Length: 422
Image (cartoon, rainbow, N blue to C red; front, side):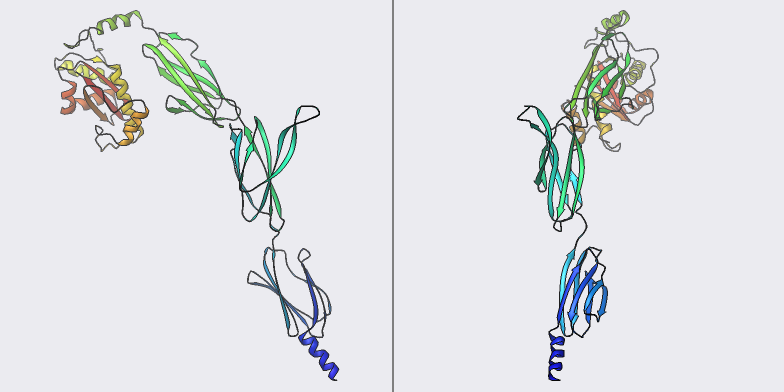
């Protein structure tokens, strides 16, 4: 009897039991020498999964190990308890890549980020000199890297594979391509085909192509759009003399091409006679300056000048000459007021820093043309702008000054700016 009691006590306090977790098979194998039952409790991340009470001495217990997590398994036989903790991770690491899809640089930075700890490898094709044939041949290569690495590319398609392995030997890979583009975009002038003309205006057309796409096209400092065929069209109003049109084209890799077309606008005999008459303008008056009988009512600097000259003549003052240099500066100032969204409730004679920076970017200093400055906004026609200037005593006193000898006006959007010289 004593032997039996000793055996029972041994099996109660020091039982023989062996347990093996077969995680991929979703089961636990056990064996024991005890008349007492085996209790198996399984939980993960503090969430209960199952509890089994087993009386047999050997066998397999089905346990759901399919989900990733931090597992705890508690084995109890008699008064003896064993606790095992382990991690199940069957999920491959998530790879996030950051790189230029199209590049004009031979050396490029690749950043590979994982959502957990692990290692990364880069698989790629490199050109290697064959020592036997002395020819360059493509060869697959693999190298380790950490968060980022420099990679070299050549013209055309460059294929890469990033392979990531986490701490539980789960792997995944991402294939990607970088287009090497070291070629500048191609620009072809479609029209005009001539270099000299008597026309007053023309539609210019440029055909722009690049196998990897165009990023932007600048006409001067203004971005313009093309059609699906890659044709960029815009109207140019000719002034007498040389008219230079300059385009800057950027492709998606960052390559750029500059293209220009210069057209000489010749002056007809009638215009030459008018210019001779106009050239008699002096400090004493308007000389041979004449104002058209009918002024065009579309909004332009010259049309506003035309109406104001008529209003001057209504008061028996002479018509003023046209100053193209003043008009050029006035057009730039109107453009800067418009594009910087200068408030209509603010005084445009005191520009904001944004307006000043815009003028600097357009190549003008803050020194304005000699003479009086007049500004109006938000009118519907050339005549309504001229009427606004005439209705303002401050502006009209400048414009109708008997000592004035020339005017120049510029427009942009809702703004009109003018300078009257003395």
